[in-house]
Amino acid sequence: MSKKVLALSLLSETEGKPNVTASEPVETSKPAETTAETTGGADAPESQADEKKAGELPAVEGIAINQEKSKIEWVGAKVTGDHKGTFENFNGAIKVDDAGKVTAIAFNADTTSVTSDNEKLTGHLKSPDFFDVAKYPVASFSSTEIKEGSDVKPGEGQAAFTHTVTGNMDLHGQKKSITFPARISTEGDVVSASTEFNLNRFDFGIEYKGKPDDLIKKEVLLKINFEAPKKAAE
Image (tube, rainbow, N blue to C red):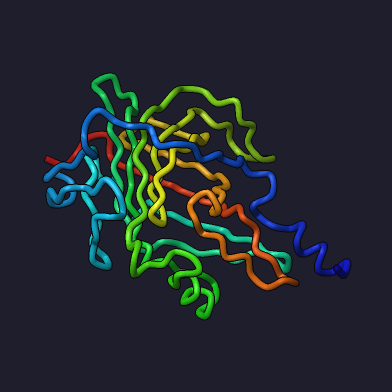
């Protein structure tokens, strides 16, 4: 490997970010929660076995996030550098109790809406090598526990993590429990929740390795920023 290529590989944005470990999903005592008040009342599927049409997302219970001020981004790295992208179509909700404490966070992402900084790559990401969007059009996350505090140190110049979130991630037909640090704030009239962590795509059966001389890392950096009003609109 040349010094130039090695230097590029060391500049990956995924470096130094928290890595999460996937384990068996946490079984909840009741089906996935939905509500007619947030996104129309459609029943949320328990897994990707429940087929969804492209662009159709299950409902989530809680205060709907502000779509214009929220985003889901990703960064994938290979030997020669990073690629960045987003999920353009997603929904989410945050639940807050009477004391103003965040008790749950959930979201769904339309995998057919994945974008990247390269048109050819975007098409490849939608193929069976990666998200296989025709078969698995929805990726989802639903928290099972939110605790105050975090043992994970933030990156240089970044704010400290305030909470630890555990929940079930349903991606590519695989449902696993993951735990990650987050920054959650209930100051003012809004609730904000953000995180960035490396997810091992191999844990979810996405195992395309790339070219022999330009291998793709297993870890994909997810960057999530949500904002919601403290109270749902009446």
